[in-house]
Amino acid sequence: MALYIESFGHYSRTQINFYSGLAFSVTYFAQAVVSPYWGNLADRKGRKLMCLRASGVMTFTVFLTGLATNVYMIIFLRLLQGAFSGYINNSTAFMAGEAPKGHSGAIMSQMMTASVTGNLLGPMFGGAIAGIFGYRAPFMIFGVLMGIVFLMTLTTKEHFTPIPAKEMKPMKEVFAGLKNRRLIFFMFATTLLVQMSLMSISPIISLLVKQLMHGVGNVSFVSGIVAAMPGFGTLLVASRLGNKMDEVGPLKILMLGLILATCLFVPMYFASSPVSLGGLRFALGMANAAMLPAVQTVLTTSVPHEAFGRIFSWNQSFQAAGGMFGPMIGSAVSSIFSYQSVFLATAIFVFIDFWIVFSVRKMA
Image 1: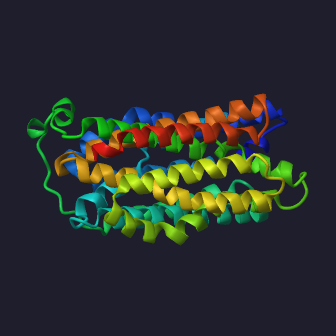
Image 2: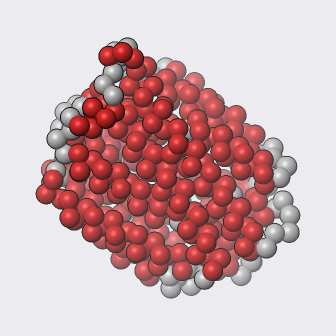
Image 3: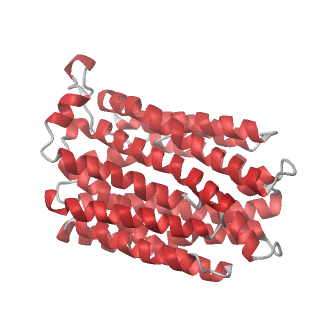
């Protein structure tokens, strides 16, 4: 995204950081605002409809991003995309409702594996396509792929009984009926901080790789590989962690992931080449496999089935807020200090999150 924006004009480093951070952040801002509404509709009409809504709109917004003529069009399309997005979160709630009892951890990890596979292949193919055909081509191709996702979703079957609006409990009453309300709210906070940490480097990773390569070589392809490295790590351990989660409990796995991530972000500050940065991000992927799936498992086992859509959508709002603040903080830190300084700031956020989870571990 940063390299695409850079191609629109002669922007300064501060301007590129700002616009790329804004392009990432507005998507998550829109998600954070509208997710509770979509969650309420999901509990009334079903999660399949929400998946169709998200994939259908994203087909057009992603494709049109490749036709943008200036940075403001990109920002507007990203805002629109955020307002109608949420495919992954709604499909996660879909699968949580269909999962057999006692297998939630494994199912959530499989969903994480599927999501990470997309995150893994996306930057690799996107970088390769951009390097050969230019920065517009990946958006057009991935827009077409979202159209295929829409058609595939049409073929799925959801075991869901629509709930009339008059029979739905108000969200205040749902929260009041939860046994572990504090635990749920702390999981929301954990989602916020985890997503903030993971997204803080996203707007500038291609610029950091370009700096490490001294502007020589196929920066698009190499930055795509570096961006995708966490996916390899996640794929390596996600399934095993999912089964382990069902055995020892999700909070223990979550704490393991948080402390590992903290220990990995610090040495990233000292990375001197794309190879060392990519290796550390590969290890970070293993920590990623333990974090958000564990949070989703806690939510799955702690809330009533009829409130899945709304609870998961509130969690999506916090995740989106993290996705909004993360790039903004990353862009600000990199503009004031350096690209590498973002990793130290991120390590602090992750450690705070670890302390939160450690303090509430007995509530589950």
